[in-house]
Length: 182
Image (cartoon, rainbow, N blue to C red; front, side):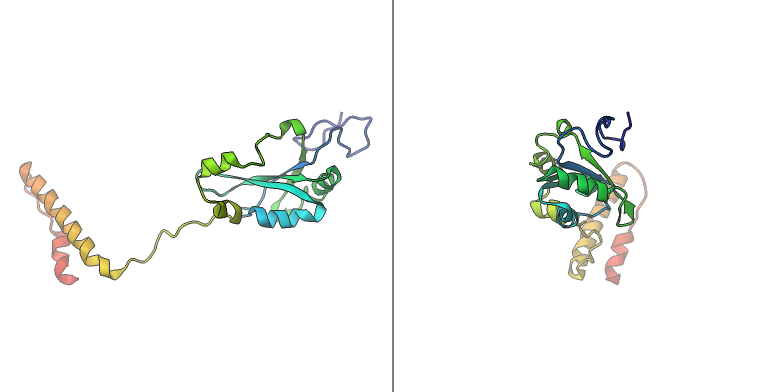
């Protein structure tokens, strides 16, 4: 009994080569490039036929793609054609992997995305338009520096008092000396 691909059901020898002995219109696509979102993927795979649903799996922590997606076609023939054309195709420097998914293996809530919306906890735009990291190194406003320096001096004074109360004779006046230089 020959087996086509890693995740497909064995093909019966009585069937013609490439035929699948079940009705399948859901396609698994693996090795999707990072940052690929639903809209570009839908545009790319719609050349094979009418698409009913597209879901890209995302990380619960970051919202970034996990590298695989499920696509549901309106017709089985479109799904079969998509698998034949997409399997082994290079996209974004990666070789795509495509397989038909057995209807019993398709989770009933895969197209609702309830689980991903809850796990990721991000708004709809971030899920559909792709991952956009927040800016971490934003330049600070110069007007806030004197207030920040004053807070650091206050904390430093409290630490020095605490050390004195413990009987430790140590004094560090690093921030207090900088007040004159600002």
